[in-house]
Image (cartoon, rainbow, N blue to C red; front, side, top):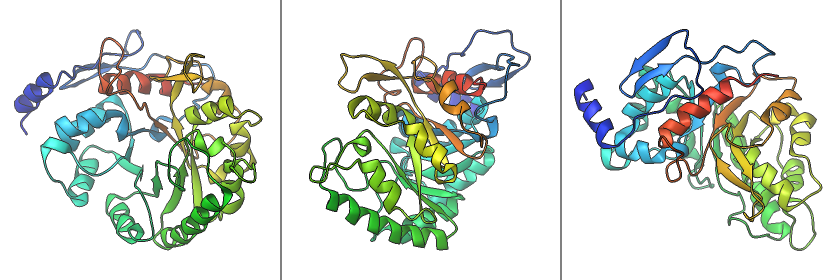
Length: 323
C-alpha cells in the first residue's frame, strides 16, 4: 500500500489520533496519523514500566486490525512507541487472509515483538498453536478466558482441578518448545468454588506447576475481584513469587458503584486504580511486560478519538509512571 493510499484508507476509517498529555515536545515523529508529540519530561523517580516493555493487547484495537489490517496498525503502534504486541487472534477481517509468517515479517519491519497471544487452548490444538507462536517469535502463549470455561458464574472445585491438570500437561509441551504458557484472569478467578468454598485463584496458585504454567494478572479484573469477593490483595500474589508473573495487563478502571463490577473500564490514566502504588512495591520492575488493554476502546472512545487514539494517550500515561 502506498502512503497516499494508506492516508485515504485512514481518513475513511476516521483514525486521526489525538495527542496525549499537553506538553512542549522536545522532538516529534511524523506519521500518517499526524504528528506524535514527545513524552513530557518527567524526572522524579524511576520508570515503573520501562519503555521497551510496554505492549498492547490487540483486542483493544480490534476494529482497526479488522478495517486497516496488521500492516497499518503495526506502523502506527510503532510510531506511538509500543514495542510489544499481544495477539487476540491472527486474522485481519476485511483486509484478507494473512499467514503467521507474513505477520512476523510485518512485526520485524516495524521493530515490534510478539510477547504473547490469547488463544482458546486445549489438548487438540496446543501443538499447532505452539508452532504459530514459534513462527511469531513469541516467548509466551496464553488464553484470555477462564481455563475451566464459562465467564462469571461460580463452578465446583473438580471443574477447576481438571482444567489445572490439563494446563500442566500443555505447559510441559510449551516448555519443551521454549515457550511459557500463561493464564489470564477475569473476576471469576477471585470467586469461590460452589462446593468447597475455596478461592479459585488459590487453586490455580497451588495447582499450576510453577515451572510449566504462569500467570498474566489483569490488574483491573483483579480489582473487580477484590471488590466483589473481599478478603484478598492481588498484589500479594505477585510479591509472593514475582517470577510467576511474566506479564501484567495494565487496564484502568474508574470506580462506579452503579456498575455491578464496582468499576468502569476506561483508558489508562482516566481511572483511579492506583498503578503507581501497585507497581512501586514490585522490586523486580523491568522483569515483566506491561501490556495495555482497554476492552471497550473500539466502542466507547473518549472525545476526541477512537481505539488507536486511546492507545496513544494510554501509552503516554504508562510511560510516565514513576515510582
